[in-house]
Length: 127
Image 1 (cartoon, rainbow, N blue to C red):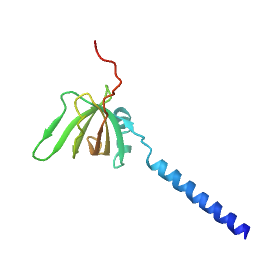
Image 2: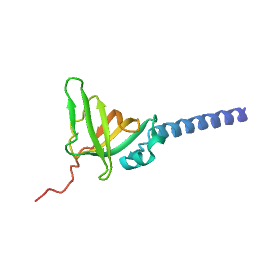
Image 3: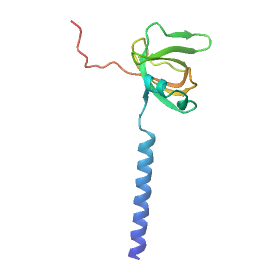
Image 4: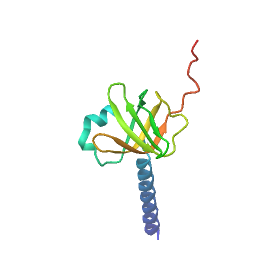
């Protein structure tokens, strides 16, 4: 009787541990920078990716009819053309830090999700 109870408890702990591990692993927020993605090039094609960068000034184009947004994400050295169709966050603007999720075809990153970093409430005020 005690052996069966001990085995049942061990199985439940193992299953619980596995579920916690797999849940934590799938929610990790790892992403590449623009330069890292471009350096890896073709090896990153057709993979679901997250890429971080900054919206390059002067690169934002919106087609109101189709709802397509085009912009360049940059790391200050490299630029990556991005296309996105969907809801654009209020904090999205030139110079904003962004994270895009989607796929890279070797030339353009097609985003299915767009996140723009919120400005810090604790930044020093310019005098």
